[in-house]
Image (cartoon, rainbow, N blue to C red; front, side, top):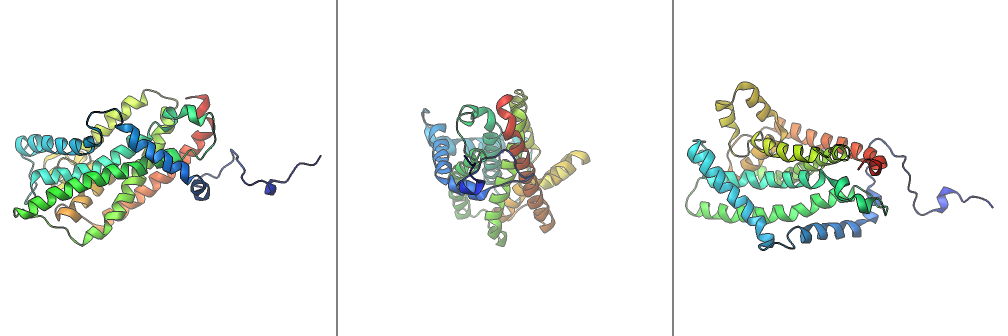
Length: 288
């Protein structure tokens, strides 16, 4: 009895992969499963909560109020002609999308070990579903920001967008790639080191303060030691937060060099993340 050739099969599942392998055709074949996971992520997060999706609105508003009271009123952080609350809300809206992408994908293997051990599908669908589902939360918070934006424009605040607003989709892509890439790298580490989950939670909070979220980059240059100020300035997340504020509020700093640098780092983090993710996928079930 002869063995059929490989070309007689519709699909071939193999552990042998290229160093960088993103099989878009396979992901497209499993698009229904991707959509199902996206719906699951949206529905189940707040399914048994009292306020439900209202937390999407409460969290950035509450955080913006706290930042305004602590950093602007008590810490005398100057935001120029832009109202402090709107300044903080812009930074938090951008930061929250990156943070949710990173946190949601950082424990992909541990959170889905049961389903991964029973059925085959492209594992990268899981972190992709988190990134896509968080877009809904981002756009809800963006609508809230636009509402306050219109209010402050109506009362004569000195805010206005500029032509960089055309780069808005690119900034979303950079935040998604950076959060997805870092999340996949960390998810590969949490399969072996469980205490990484605690470190990630602490590290994300620390990273927020080192990414110019509650203050403008100009204030960091004035008040931080040179070493810390340089870290904040060359942090690609700072470039994203500053660019987000610049195109929406016409405040802060923007350079094409910084934009290209940030885009390059985002793409590299994604490629490194997908490479490590694919390597971990082969053996994670033995260590998780």
